[in-house]
Length: 570
Ligand SMILES: Cc1cc2nc3c(=O)[nH]c(=O)nc-3n(C[C@H](O)[C@H](O)[C@H](O)COP(=O)(O)OP(=O)(O)OC[C@H]3O[C@@H](n4cnc5c(N)ncnc54)[C@H](O)[C@@H]3O)c2cc1C
Image (cartoon, rainbow, N blue to C red; front, side, top):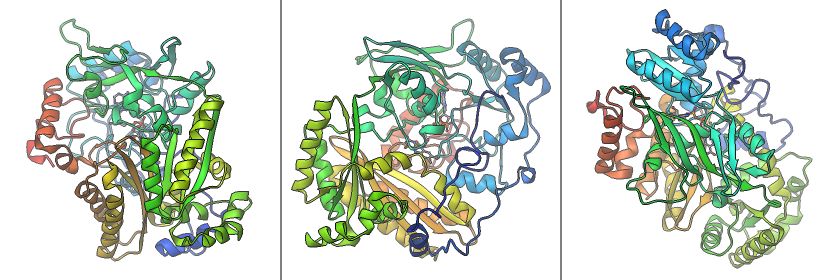
Protein backbone atom coordinates (compact mmCIF):
# COMPACT_ATOMS: atom_id res chain seq x y z
CA UNK A 1 0.00 0.00 0.00
CA UNK A 2 1.09 3.55 -0.56
CA UNK A 3 2.22 4.65 2.89
CA UNK A 4 0.67 8.11 2.87
CA UNK A 5 -2.90 7.04 2.02
CA UNK A 6 -4.90 5.48 4.85
CA UNK A 7 -7.83 3.20 4.06
CA UNK A 8 -10.65 1.78 6.13
CA UNK A 9 -10.58 -1.81 7.40
CA UNK A 10 -10.87 -4.14 4.43
CA UNK A 11 -13.80 -5.92 6.11
CA UNK A 12 -15.70 -3.06 7.72
CA UNK A 13 -16.20 0.57 8.55
CA UNK A 14 -13.54 2.93 9.84
CA UNK A 15 -10.19 2.26 11.36
CA UNK A 16 -8.84 -0.73 13.26
CA UNK A 17 -9.43 -0.72 16.98
CA UNK A 18 -12.56 1.45 16.84
CA UNK A 19 -15.98 -0.14 17.12
CA UNK A 20 -19.42 0.10 18.69
CA UNK A 21 -19.77 -0.91 22.35
CA UNK A 22 -23.00 -1.63 24.13
CA UNK A 23 -21.92 -2.40 27.69
CA UNK A 24 -22.00 1.30 28.62
CA UNK A 25 -25.52 1.69 27.22
CA UNK A 26 -27.89 -0.10 29.57
CA UNK A 27 -30.94 0.28 27.36
CA UNK A 28 -29.30 -1.17 24.26
CA UNK A 29 -29.40 -4.94 24.83
CA UNK A 30 -33.10 -4.98 25.84
CA UNK A 31 -33.87 -2.76 22.85
CA UNK A 32 -32.13 -5.10 20.39
CA UNK A 33 -33.82 -8.14 21.85
CA UNK A 34 -37.22 -6.56 21.57
CA UNK A 35 -36.56 -5.19 18.06
CA UNK A 36 -35.00 -8.15 16.27
CA UNK A 37 -34.98 -10.96 18.83
CA UNK A 38 -31.19 -10.97 19.25
CA UNK A 39 -29.91 -11.57 22.79
CA UNK A 40 -26.57 -9.79 22.98
CA UNK A 41 -25.68 -11.64 26.18
CA UNK A 42 -25.82 -15.03 24.46
CA UNK A 43 -24.79 -14.08 20.92
CA UNK A 44 -21.00 -14.05 21.05
CA UNK A 45 -19.37 -12.01 18.31
CA UNK A 46 -17.41 -13.79 15.61
CA UNK A 47 -13.73 -12.96 15.31
CA UNK A 48 -12.77 -10.48 12.62
CA UNK A 49 -12.31 -12.32 9.31
CA UNK A 50 -8.80 -13.43 8.45
CA UNK A 51 -7.24 -11.86 5.39
CA UNK A 52 -5.42 -15.15 4.73
CA UNK A 53 -8.80 -16.71 3.89
CA UNK A 54 -9.47 -14.21 1.12
CA UNK A 55 -8.83 -15.40 -2.40
CA UNK A 56 -8.38 -13.07 -5.32
CA UNK A 57 -7.82 -14.06 -8.93
CA UNK A 58 -4.41 -13.22 -10.36
CA UNK A 59 -4.07 -9.70 -11.68
CA UNK A 60 -4.62 -9.32 -15.42
CA UNK A 61 -2.29 -6.31 -15.57
CA UNK A 62 0.82 -7.11 -17.56
CA UNK A 63 4.22 -6.23 -16.08
CA UNK A 64 4.76 -3.91 -19.05
CA UNK A 65 1.56 -1.98 -18.28
CA UNK A 66 2.40 -1.77 -14.58
CA UNK A 67 5.86 -0.44 -15.33
CA UNK A 68 4.48 2.09 -17.84
CA UNK A 69 2.29 3.46 -15.04
CA UNK A 70 5.19 3.33 -12.59
CA UNK A 71 7.09 5.59 -14.96
CA UNK A 72 4.25 8.13 -14.55
CA UNK A 73 3.43 7.98 -10.82
CA UNK A 74 6.54 6.34 -9.38
CA UNK A 75 7.00 2.68 -8.51
CA UNK A 76 5.71 3.21 -4.96
CA UNK A 77 2.38 4.45 -6.25
CA UNK A 78 1.23 1.60 -8.45
CA UNK A 79 0.51 -1.81 -7.03
CA UNK A 80 -1.01 -5.22 -7.68
CA UNK A 81 -0.81 -6.11 -3.98
CA UNK A 82 -3.67 -8.34 -2.78
CA UNK A 83 -4.71 -6.19 0.18
CA UNK A 84 -4.78 -3.07 -1.97
CA UNK A 85 -6.88 -4.83 -4.60
CA UNK A 86 -9.36 -6.10 -2.00
CA UNK A 87 -9.68 -2.68 -0.33
CA UNK A 88 -10.54 -1.19 -3.72
CA UNK A 89 -13.05 -3.88 -4.78
CA UNK A 90 -16.13 -2.72 -2.91
CA UNK A 91 -17.58 0.23 -1.05
CA UNK A 92 -19.19 -0.15 2.37
CA UNK A 93 -22.77 -1.19 1.67
CA UNK A 94 -24.23 -4.06 3.64
CA UNK A 95 -24.00 -6.20 0.53
CA UNK A 96 -20.33 -5.24 0.17
CA UNK A 97 -19.52 -6.08 3.78
CA UNK A 98 -21.33 -9.43 3.67
CA UNK A 99 -19.53 -10.36 0.46
CA UNK A 100 -16.05 -9.34 1.49
CA UNK A 101 -16.36 -11.06 4.88
CA UNK A 102 -17.52 -14.24 3.09
CA UNK A 103 -14.67 -14.18 0.55
CA UNK A 104 -17.16 -13.46 -2.26
CA UNK A 105 -14.90 -11.36 -4.43
CA UNK A 106 -16.14 -11.84 -7.94
CA UNK A 107 -13.87 -9.33 -9.63
CA UNK A 108 -11.19 -7.26 -7.91
CA UNK A 109 -9.40 -4.44 -9.72
CA UNK A 110 -6.17 -5.71 -11.26
CA UNK A 111 -4.08 -2.84 -10.04
CA UNK A 112 -4.32 0.32 -7.98
CA UNK A 113 -2.69 3.60 -8.98
CA UNK A 114 -2.14 6.64 -6.75
CA UNK A 115 -1.40 9.71 -8.89
CA UNK A 116 0.09 12.73 -7.16
CA UNK A 117 -1.19 15.54 -9.36
CA UNK A 118 -3.50 16.39 -12.23
CA UNK A 119 -0.83 15.86 -14.87
CA UNK A 120 -0.21 12.35 -13.58
CA UNK A 121 -3.96 11.66 -13.64
CA UNK A 122 -4.03 12.76 -17.29
CA UNK A 123 -1.13 10.53 -18.24
CA UNK A 124 -2.58 7.53 -16.37
CA UNK A 125 -5.97 8.05 -18.05
CA UNK A 126 -4.39 8.32 -21.48
CA UNK A 127 -2.26 5.21 -20.97
CA UNK A 128 -5.26 3.28 -19.66
CA UNK A 129 -7.65 4.29 -22.43
CA UNK A 130 -5.00 3.58 -25.09
CA UNK A 131 -4.69 0.05 -23.63
CA UNK A 132 -8.50 -0.32 -23.39
CA UNK A 133 -8.32 -0.58 -19.62
CA UNK A 134 -11.31 0.11 -17.34
CA UNK A 135 -10.75 3.00 -14.90
CA UNK A 136 -12.68 3.20 -11.62
CA UNK A 137 -11.98 6.35 -9.58
CA UNK A 138 -11.74 5.76 -5.82
CA UNK A 139 -12.17 8.48 -3.18
CA UNK A 140 -12.76 7.29 0.39
CA UNK A 141 -14.40 4.02 -0.63
CA UNK A 142 -17.50 4.73 1.48
CA UNK A 143 -20.08 4.31 -1.29
CA UNK A 144 -23.13 2.18 -0.47
CA UNK A 145 -24.83 1.95 -3.85
CA UNK A 146 -22.45 -0.50 -5.58
CA UNK A 147 -20.63 2.28 -7.47
CA UNK A 148 -17.11 0.98 -7.03
CA UNK A 149 -17.08 -2.71 -7.89
CA UNK A 150 -15.86 -3.79 -11.32
CA UNK A 151 -18.48 -5.63 -13.34
CA UNK A 152 -18.19 -9.32 -12.53
CA UNK A 153 -17.74 -10.36 -16.15
CA UNK A 154 -15.15 -7.70 -17.01
CA UNK A 155 -12.43 -9.30 -19.18
CA UNK A 156 -10.36 -6.14 -19.62
CA UNK A 157 -7.78 -4.96 -17.12
CA UNK A 158 -9.43 -2.94 -14.33
CA UNK A 159 -7.52 -0.04 -12.78
CA UNK A 160 -8.63 1.56 -9.53
CA UNK A 161 -7.49 5.17 -9.55
CA UNK A 162 -7.12 6.20 -5.93
CA UNK A 163 -7.24 9.96 -5.37
CA UNK A 164 -5.89 9.78 -1.82
CA UNK A 165 -2.59 11.58 -2.48
CA UNK A 166 -4.38 14.61 -3.98
CA UNK A 167 -5.79 16.30 -0.88
CA UNK A 168 -4.47 19.85 -0.73
CA UNK A 169 -6.38 23.07 -0.24
CA UNK A 170 -4.97 24.96 -3.25
CA UNK A 171 -6.20 28.45 -2.42
CA UNK A 172 -9.11 30.50 -1.08
CA UNK A 173 -10.65 33.47 -2.87
CA UNK A 174 -11.65 35.15 0.41
CA UNK A 175 -13.57 37.94 -1.29
CA UNK A 176 -15.84 35.46 -3.07
CA UNK A 177 -15.93 32.73 -0.41
CA UNK A 178 -14.60 30.14 -2.83
CA UNK A 179 -11.94 27.51 -2.13
CA UNK A 180 -10.06 25.38 -4.66
CA UNK A 181 -9.45 21.93 -3.21
CA UNK A 182 -8.00 18.74 -4.65
CA UNK A 183 -10.67 16.08 -5.01
CA UNK A 184 -9.01 13.36 -2.93
CA UNK A 185 -9.24 15.32 0.35
CA UNK A 186 -11.19 13.41 3.00
CA UNK A 187 -13.63 15.31 5.22
CA UNK A 188 -11.47 15.82 8.34
CA UNK A 189 -8.37 16.80 6.35
CA UNK A 190 -10.35 19.23 4.24
CA UNK A 191 -12.08 20.87 7.23
CA UNK A 192 -8.80 21.05 9.12
CA UNK A 193 -7.09 22.89 6.25
CA UNK A 194 -10.02 25.26 5.81
CA UNK A 195 -10.47 25.71 9.56
CA UNK A 196 -6.83 26.73 9.99
CA UNK A 197 -7.73 29.77 7.88
CA UNK A 198 -11.08 30.44 9.55
CA UNK A 199 -13.33 28.79 6.95
CA UNK A 200 -15.64 25.78 6.71
CA UNK A 201 -17.30 23.90 3.87
CA UNK A 202 -20.19 22.93 6.13
CA UNK A 203 -20.60 19.54 4.41
CA UNK A 204 -20.87 16.81 7.03
CA UNK A 205 -22.29 13.51 5.74
CA UNK A 206 -22.45 10.70 8.33
CA UNK A 207 -19.52 9.20 6.42
CA UNK A 208 -17.55 12.47 6.75
CA UNK A 209 -14.49 10.84 8.36
CA UNK A 210 -13.87 8.48 5.43
CA UNK A 211 -15.28 10.11 2.31
CA UNK A 212 -13.71 12.56 -0.12
CA UNK A 213 -14.62 15.76 -1.91
CA UNK A 214 -14.46 14.01 -5.31
CA UNK A 215 -16.64 11.15 -4.04
CA UNK A 216 -19.19 13.60 -2.64
CA UNK A 217 -19.42 15.35 -5.99
CA UNK A 218 -19.54 12.11 -7.98
CA UNK A 219 -22.47 10.81 -5.88
CA UNK A 220 -24.47 14.03 -5.25
CA UNK A 221 -23.84 13.81 -1.55
CA UNK A 222 -25.69 15.67 1.19
CA UNK A 223 -24.46 16.51 4.69
CA UNK A 224 -26.34 16.82 7.97
CA UNK A 225 -26.16 20.65 7.88
CA UNK A 226 -27.43 20.87 4.31
CA UNK A 227 -30.37 23.07 5.32
CA UNK A 228 -27.90 25.92 5.74
CA UNK A 229 -24.94 25.00 3.53
CA UNK A 230 -26.78 23.17 0.73
CA UNK A 231 -26.16 19.77 -0.81
CA UNK A 232 -22.84 19.22 -2.57
CA UNK A 233 -24.60 20.10 -5.85
CA UNK A 234 -25.19 23.61 -4.43
CA UNK A 235 -21.74 23.87 -2.89
CA UNK A 236 -19.61 22.93 -5.90
CA UNK A 237 -19.16 25.70 -8.45
CA UNK A 238 -15.97 25.02 -10.41
CA UNK A 239 -14.54 21.68 -11.54
CA UNK A 240 -11.53 20.10 -13.17
CA UNK A 241 -12.29 16.74 -14.74
CA UNK A 242 -9.66 14.69 -16.54
CA UNK A 243 -10.88 12.91 -19.64
CA UNK A 244 -8.87 11.22 -22.37
CA UNK A 245 -6.77 13.60 -24.44
CA UNK A 246 -6.58 13.03 -28.17
CA UNK A 247 -4.24 14.14 -30.93
CA UNK A 248 -2.57 16.75 -28.75
CA UNK A 249 -5.88 18.17 -27.48
CA UNK A 250 -6.00 18.37 -23.69
CA UNK A 251 -8.40 16.06 -21.91
CA UNK A 252 -9.03 18.56 -19.14
CA UNK A 253 -12.66 19.64 -18.77
CA UNK A 254 -12.79 22.94 -16.86
CA UNK A 255 -15.89 24.47 -15.34
CA UNK A 256 -15.07 27.92 -13.99
CA UNK A 257 -16.56 28.90 -10.61
CA UNK A 258 -19.27 31.20 -11.90
CA UNK A 259 -22.12 31.75 -9.37
CA UNK A 260 -24.83 31.20 -11.99
CA UNK A 261 -24.99 31.21 -15.77
CA UNK A 262 -27.26 30.50 -18.73
CA UNK A 263 -24.84 28.47 -20.81
CA UNK A 264 -27.24 25.73 -21.86
CA UNK A 265 -27.68 22.44 -20.03
CA UNK A 266 -25.28 22.55 -17.11
CA UNK A 267 -22.15 20.45 -17.70
CA UNK A 268 -21.35 20.97 -14.03
CA UNK A 269 -24.62 19.25 -13.15
CA UNK A 270 -23.74 16.40 -15.51
CA UNK A 271 -20.50 15.83 -13.62
CA UNK A 272 -22.22 16.03 -10.25
CA UNK A 273 -23.54 12.51 -9.65
CA UNK A 274 -21.61 10.96 -12.58
CA UNK A 275 -20.05 8.21 -10.38
CA UNK A 276 -16.84 8.14 -12.38
CA UNK A 277 -18.53 7.65 -15.74
CA UNK A 278 -17.51 10.98 -17.28
CA UNK A 279 -13.90 11.22 -16.11
CA UNK A 280 -11.78 11.86 -13.03
CA UNK A 281 -12.61 14.89 -10.89
CA UNK A 282 -9.21 16.21 -9.85
CA UNK A 283 -10.22 19.42 -8.10
CA UNK A 284 -13.26 21.49 -7.27
CA UNK A 285 -13.90 25.10 -6.40
CA UNK A 286 -16.45 25.11 -3.63
CA UNK A 287 -18.43 27.69 -1.70
CA UNK A 288 -16.97 28.12 1.79
CA UNK A 289 -18.17 30.07 4.82
CA UNK A 290 -16.47 31.81 7.71
CA UNK A 291 -16.66 29.56 10.77
CA UNK A 292 -19.82 30.75 12.50
CA UNK A 293 -19.52 32.60 15.79
CA UNK A 294 -22.28 30.48 17.26
CA UNK A 295 -23.31 26.90 16.64
CA UNK A 296 -25.87 25.15 18.79
CA UNK A 297 -28.04 22.08 18.34
CA UNK A 298 -31.18 21.97 20.50
CA UNK A 299 -33.42 19.03 21.29
CA UNK A 300 -37.21 19.08 21.04
CA UNK A 301 -39.92 16.50 21.63
CA UNK A 302 -43.19 16.20 19.76
CA UNK A 303 -46.23 14.18 20.83
CA UNK A 304 -46.17 12.21 17.58
CA UNK A 305 -44.68 12.00 14.06
CA UNK A 306 -47.47 13.91 12.28
CA UNK A 307 -47.16 16.89 14.63
CA UNK A 308 -43.39 16.89 14.26
CA UNK A 309 -43.50 16.74 10.47
CA UNK A 310 -46.07 19.54 10.35
CA UNK A 311 -43.68 21.65 12.44
CA UNK A 312 -40.69 20.80 10.19
CA UNK A 313 -42.70 21.78 7.14
CA UNK A 314 -43.69 25.08 8.66
CA UNK A 315 -40.10 25.77 9.71
CA UNK A 316 -38.94 25.13 6.13
CA UNK A 317 -41.48 27.64 4.84
CA UNK A 318 -40.75 30.24 7.52
CA UNK A 319 -38.11 32.95 7.76
CA UNK A 320 -36.12 30.75 10.13
CA UNK A 321 -33.24 29.07 8.36
CA UNK A 322 -31.81 26.51 10.78
CA UNK A 323 -28.74 24.53 9.75
CA UNK A 324 -30.31 21.22 10.83
CA UNK A 325 -33.95 20.19 11.00
CA UNK A 326 -34.23 16.58 11.92
CA UNK A 327 -36.95 14.51 13.53
CA UNK A 328 -36.93 10.81 14.39
CA UNK A 329 -40.09 8.76 14.26
CA UNK A 330 -41.25 7.09 17.48
CA UNK A 331 -39.23 3.92 16.79
CA UNK A 332 -36.01 5.79 16.13
CA UNK A 333 -36.64 7.91 19.21
CA UNK A 334 -36.78 4.67 21.19
CA UNK A 335 -33.50 3.61 19.60
CA UNK A 336 -31.83 6.95 20.42
CA UNK A 337 -32.85 6.71 24.06
CA UNK A 338 -31.59 3.11 24.15
CA UNK A 339 -28.14 4.09 22.88
CA UNK A 340 -27.67 6.84 25.46
CA UNK A 341 -25.02 6.32 28.08
CA UNK A 342 -26.37 5.89 31.59
CA UNK A 343 -24.21 8.57 33.12
CA UNK A 344 -25.45 11.29 30.81
CA UNK A 345 -27.82 13.81 32.27
CA UNK A 346 -30.25 13.75 29.40
CA UNK A 347 -30.62 10.01 29.57
CA UNK A 348 -31.43 10.16 33.26
CA UNK A 349 -33.87 12.94 32.54
CA UNK A 350 -35.61 11.01 29.75
CA UNK A 351 -35.66 7.69 31.53
CA UNK A 352 -36.59 9.21 34.89
CA UNK A 353 -39.85 10.59 36.03
CA UNK A 354 -39.72 14.32 35.25
CA UNK A 355 -40.04 14.28 31.48
CA UNK A 356 -42.42 11.32 31.15
CA UNK A 357 -44.65 12.80 33.86
CA UNK A 358 -44.75 16.12 32.07
CA UNK A 359 -45.51 14.41 28.75
CA UNK A 360 -48.28 12.33 30.26
CA UNK A 361 -49.79 15.40 31.86
CA UNK A 362 -50.04 16.87 28.38
CA UNK A 363 -51.90 13.78 27.19
CA UNK A 364 -48.94 12.38 25.20
CA UNK A 365 -48.53 8.62 24.72
CA UNK A 366 -44.90 7.81 25.50
CA UNK A 367 -44.75 5.22 22.71
CA UNK A 368 -45.56 7.92 20.16
CA UNK A 369 -43.11 10.65 21.15
CA UNK A 370 -40.63 11.86 18.56
CA UNK A 371 -37.23 13.41 19.24
CA UNK A 372 -36.08 16.27 17.06
CA UNK A 373 -32.80 18.18 16.67
CA UNK A 374 -32.67 21.68 15.31
CA UNK A 375 -29.39 23.46 14.68
CA UNK A 376 -28.70 27.18 14.66
CA UNK A 377 -25.56 28.72 13.21
CA UNK A 378 -24.33 32.19 12.48
CA UNK A 379 -23.83 35.41 14.39
CA UNK A 380 -25.18 35.61 17.95
CA UNK A 381 -28.21 37.75 17.01
CA UNK A 382 -29.01 35.66 13.95
CA UNK A 383 -28.92 32.36 15.84
CA UNK A 384 -31.05 33.79 18.65
CA UNK A 385 -33.67 35.08 16.24
CA UNK A 386 -33.77 31.76 14.36
CA UNK A 387 -34.39 29.90 17.57
CA UNK A 388 -37.14 32.28 18.63
CA UNK A 389 -38.97 31.73 15.34
CA UNK A 390 -38.55 27.95 15.56
CA UNK A 391 -39.62 27.79 19.21
CA UNK A 392 -42.86 29.54 18.28
CA UNK A 393 -43.57 27.01 15.52
CA UNK A 394 -42.68 24.04 17.74
CA UNK A 395 -45.09 25.30 20.40
CA UNK A 396 -47.84 25.79 17.84
CA UNK A 397 -47.54 22.10 16.92
CA UNK A 398 -47.59 20.91 20.49
CA UNK A 399 -43.85 20.25 20.83
CA UNK A 400 -41.52 21.21 23.67
CA UNK A 401 -37.86 22.16 23.85
CA UNK A 402 -35.50 20.16 26.07
CA UNK A 403 -32.39 22.30 25.78
CA UNK A 404 -28.95 21.66 24.40
CA UNK A 405 -28.23 18.36 26.23
CA UNK A 406 -29.59 16.01 23.53
CA UNK A 407 -28.02 18.18 20.83
CA UNK A 408 -24.59 17.88 22.44
CA UNK A 409 -25.08 14.10 22.57
CA UNK A 410 -26.16 14.02 18.94
CA UNK A 411 -23.09 16.00 17.91
CA UNK A 412 -20.82 13.63 19.84
CA UNK A 413 -22.35 10.42 18.46
CA UNK A 414 -22.98 11.46 14.87
CA UNK A 415 -19.90 9.84 13.34
CA UNK A 416 -20.02 6.71 15.55
CA UNK A 417 -23.26 5.21 14.24
CA UNK A 418 -21.62 3.69 11.11
CA UNK A 419 -19.72 1.28 13.38
CA UNK A 420 -23.02 -0.26 14.44
CA UNK A 421 -23.34 -2.19 11.18
CA UNK A 422 -20.15 -4.16 11.85
CA UNK A 423 -21.26 -4.80 15.42
CA UNK A 424 -24.48 -6.37 14.09
CA UNK A 425 -22.73 -8.31 11.32
CA UNK A 426 -20.35 -9.74 13.91
CA UNK A 427 -23.45 -11.18 15.59
CA UNK A 428 -25.17 -12.50 12.45
CA UNK A 429 -27.53 -9.58 11.93
CA UNK A 430 -28.06 -7.01 9.20
CA UNK A 431 -28.38 -3.27 9.74
CA UNK A 432 -28.66 -1.00 6.72
CA UNK A 433 -30.15 2.24 5.44
CA UNK A 434 -32.17 3.57 2.51
CA UNK A 435 -33.26 7.12 1.91
CA UNK A 436 -35.51 9.06 -0.41
CA UNK A 437 -36.64 12.63 -1.10
CA UNK A 438 -40.26 13.56 -1.60
CA UNK A 439 -42.60 16.60 -1.58
CA UNK A 440 -44.01 17.60 1.82
CA UNK A 441 -47.45 16.39 0.71
CA UNK A 442 -46.09 12.82 0.46
CA UNK A 443 -43.95 12.62 3.59
CA UNK A 444 -46.42 10.94 5.93
CA UNK A 445 -47.83 8.62 3.31
CA UNK A 446 -44.37 7.54 2.20
CA UNK A 447 -43.21 7.03 5.76
CA UNK A 448 -46.14 4.79 6.71
CA UNK A 449 -46.13 2.82 3.47
CA UNK A 450 -42.38 2.17 3.55
CA UNK A 451 -42.67 0.86 7.10
CA UNK A 452 -45.60 -1.34 6.02
CA UNK A 453 -43.66 -2.59 2.95
CA UNK A 454 -40.64 -3.51 5.07
CA UNK A 455 -42.80 -5.32 7.60
CA UNK A 456 -44.47 -7.27 4.82
CA UNK A 457 -41.01 -8.19 3.51
CA UNK A 458 -39.90 -9.34 6.97
CA UNK A 459 -43.00 -11.55 7.13
CA UNK A 460 -42.32 -12.90 3.67
CA UNK A 461 -38.90 -14.15 4.67
CA UNK A 462 -40.14 -15.23 8.09
CA UNK A 463 -37.91 -13.06 10.27
CA UNK A 464 -38.43 -10.53 13.04
CA UNK A 465 -37.26 -7.27 11.55
CA UNK A 466 -37.05 -3.67 12.58
CA UNK A 467 -37.43 -0.44 10.63
CA UNK A 468 -37.18 3.14 11.86
CA UNK A 469 -36.82 6.50 10.23
CA UNK A 470 -35.91 10.13 10.57
CA UNK A 471 -36.50 13.18 8.46
CA UNK A 472 -33.34 15.06 7.61
CA UNK A 473 -32.48 17.63 4.94
CA UNK A 474 -35.51 19.85 4.44
CA UNK A 475 -36.24 22.05 1.45
CA UNK A 476 -38.93 24.54 0.65
CA UNK A 477 -40.92 21.91 -1.22
CA UNK A 478 -40.09 18.69 0.59
CA UNK A 479 -37.65 16.64 2.62
CA UNK A 480 -35.56 13.50 2.84
CA UNK A 481 -36.68 10.50 4.87
CA UNK A 482 -33.89 8.19 6.00
CA UNK A 483 -34.82 4.63 6.97
CA UNK A 484 -32.70 2.20 8.98
CA UNK A 485 -33.64 -1.46 9.03
CA UNK A 486 -32.28 -4.50 10.83
CA UNK A 487 -32.92 -8.22 11.14
CA UNK A 488 -31.13 -11.41 12.14
CA UNK A 489 -29.96 -13.34 9.10
CA UNK A 490 -31.48 -16.71 8.25
CA UNK A 491 -29.85 -19.10 5.79
CA UNK A 492 -29.46 -16.70 2.87
CA UNK A 493 -28.20 -13.28 4.07
CA UNK A 494 -27.94 -11.62 0.65
CA UNK A 495 -31.22 -13.06 -0.60
CA UNK A 496 -33.07 -11.93 2.54
CA UNK A 497 -31.45 -8.52 2.36
CA UNK A 498 -32.59 -8.17 -1.28
CA UNK A 499 -36.21 -8.91 -0.40
CA UNK A 500 -36.28 -6.16 2.24
CA UNK A 501 -34.23 -3.61 0.32
CA UNK A 502 -36.30 -4.06 -2.84
CA UNK A 503 -39.57 -3.67 -0.95
CA UNK A 504 -38.33 -0.39 0.54
CA UNK A 505 -37.01 0.97 -2.76
CA UNK A 506 -40.22 0.14 -4.59
CA UNK A 507 -42.27 1.76 -1.84
CA UNK A 508 -40.22 4.95 -2.29
CA UNK A 509 -41.15 5.15 -5.95
CA UNK A 510 -44.77 4.06 -5.46
CA UNK A 511 -45.27 6.79 -2.87
CA UNK A 512 -43.83 9.72 -4.78
CA UNK A 513 -40.21 9.55 -3.59
CA UNK A 514 -36.89 9.39 -5.42
CA UNK A 515 -34.81 6.22 -5.61
CA UNK A 516 -32.26 7.94 -3.40
CA UNK A 517 -31.68 11.39 -1.94
CA UNK A 518 -27.90 11.27 -1.47
CA UNK A 519 -26.47 7.76 -1.82
CA UNK A 520 -26.40 7.73 -5.62
CA UNK A 521 -27.43 5.04 -8.09
CA UNK A 522 -24.49 2.68 -8.69
CA UNK A 523 -25.62 -0.87 -9.40
CA UNK A 524 -27.80 -1.16 -6.33
CA UNK A 525 -30.40 1.46 -7.25
CA UNK A 526 -30.16 1.27 -11.06
CA UNK A 527 -33.23 -1.01 -11.39
CA UNK A 528 -35.44 1.91 -10.20
CA UNK A 529 -33.92 4.61 -12.41
CA UNK A 530 -36.49 4.39 -15.19
CA UNK A 531 -39.39 4.58 -12.74
CA UNK A 532 -37.69 7.58 -11.16
CA UNK A 533 -36.78 9.71 -14.21
CA UNK A 534 -38.80 8.01 -17.03
CA UNK A 535 -37.47 6.01 -19.97
CA UNK A 536 -36.73 9.22 -21.89
CA UNK A 537 -34.72 10.48 -18.94
CA UNK A 538 -32.69 7.26 -18.97
CA UNK A 539 -32.22 7.59 -22.75
CA UNK A 540 -30.75 11.08 -22.32
CA UNK A 541 -28.37 9.84 -19.65
CA UNK A 542 -27.37 6.78 -21.63
CA UNK A 543 -26.74 8.96 -24.69
CA UNK A 544 -24.43 11.16 -22.65
CA UNK A 545 -22.36 8.27 -21.28
CA UNK A 546 -22.10 6.49 -24.62
CA UNK A 547 -21.16 9.63 -26.54
CA UNK A 548 -18.40 10.77 -24.23
CA UNK A 549 -17.07 7.32 -23.36
CA UNK A 550 -17.53 5.21 -26.51
CA UNK A 551 -15.07 2.58 -25.33
CA UNK A 552 -16.87 2.17 -21.98
CA UNK A 553 -13.59 2.72 -20.13
CA UNK A 554 -14.94 4.86 -17.27
CA UNK A 555 -16.63 2.85 -14.53
CA UNK A 556 -18.94 1.09 -17.01
CA UNK A 557 -22.43 -0.05 -16.12
CA UNK A 558 -22.89 2.21 -13.12
CA UNK A 559 -26.13 4.28 -13.07
CA UNK A 560 -27.22 2.89 -16.50
CA UNK A 561 -25.90 -0.03 -18.54
CA UNK A 562 -23.47 0.84 -21.31
CA UNK A 563 -23.59 0.40 -25.07
CA UNK A 564 -22.03 -3.03 -24.96
CA UNK A 565 -24.86 -4.58 -23.01
CA UNK A 566 -28.21 -2.95 -23.89
CA UNK A 567 -30.13 -6.10 -23.07
CA UNK A 568 -29.13 -5.78 -19.43
CA UNK A 569 -30.78 -2.43 -18.85
CA UNK A 570 -32.84 -2.60 -15.70
C1 LIG B 1 -22.03 4.60 7.20
C2 LIG B 1 -22.26 5.47 6.01
C3 LIG B 1 -22.88 6.69 6.14
C4 LIG B 1 -23.08 7.50 5.02
N1 LIG B 1 -23.68 8.72 5.17
C5 LIG B 1 -23.83 9.52 4.10
C6 LIG B 1 -24.40 10.82 4.25
O1 LIG B 1 -24.76 11.25 5.35
N2 LIG B 1 -24.52 11.58 3.15
C7 LIG B 1 -24.10 11.15 1.92
O2 LIG B 1 -24.20 11.90 0.97
N3 LIG B 1 -23.60 9.92 1.76
C8 LIG B 1 -23.43 9.10 2.80
N4 LIG B 1 -22.88 7.86 2.64
C9 LIG B 1 -22.51 7.39 1.30
C10 LIG B 1 -21.09 7.76 0.86
O3 LIG B 1 -20.32 8.18 1.96
C11 LIG B 1 -21.17 8.85 -0.18
O4 LIG B 1 -21.66 8.27 -1.39
C12 LIG B 1 -19.86 9.57 -0.47
O5 LIG B 1 -20.16 10.70 -1.22
C13 LIG B 1 -18.85 8.74 -1.20
O6 LIG B 1 -17.60 9.42 -1.17
P1 LIG B 1 -16.24 8.60 -1.28
O7 LIG B 1 -15.14 9.58 -1.34
O8 LIG B 1 -16.18 7.58 -0.24
O9 LIG B 1 -16.42 7.97 -2.72
P2 LIG B 1 -16.16 6.47 -3.18
O10 LIG B 1 -17.01 5.56 -2.40
O11 LIG B 1 -14.73 6.20 -3.24
O12 LIG B 1 -16.73 6.55 -4.67
C14 LIG B 1 -18.09 6.76 -4.93
C15 LIG B 1 -18.32 6.95 -6.42
O13 LIG B 1 -17.71 8.16 -6.84
C16 LIG B 1 -16.70 7.92 -7.81
N5 LIG B 1 -15.60 8.81 -7.51
C17 LIG B 1 -14.92 8.93 -6.35
N6 LIG B 1 -13.99 9.89 -6.46
C18 LIG B 1 -14.08 10.38 -7.71
C19 LIG B 1 -13.36 11.37 -8.43
N7 LIG B 1 -12.37 12.07 -7.89
N8 LIG B 1 -13.71 11.60 -9.73
C20 LIG B 1 -14.72 10.91 -10.30
N9 LIG B 1 -15.42 9.96 -9.66
C21 LIG B 1 -15.11 9.71 -8.38
C22 LIG B 1 -16.36 6.44 -7.67
O14 LIG B 1 -15.87 5.89 -8.87
C23 LIG B 1 -17.70 5.87 -7.28
O15 LIG B 1 -18.48 5.69 -8.42
C24 LIG B 1 -22.66 7.04 3.74
C25 LIG B 1 -22.02 5.80 3.62
C26 LIG B 1 -21.82 5.02 4.75
C27 LIG B 1 -21.13 3.70 4.60
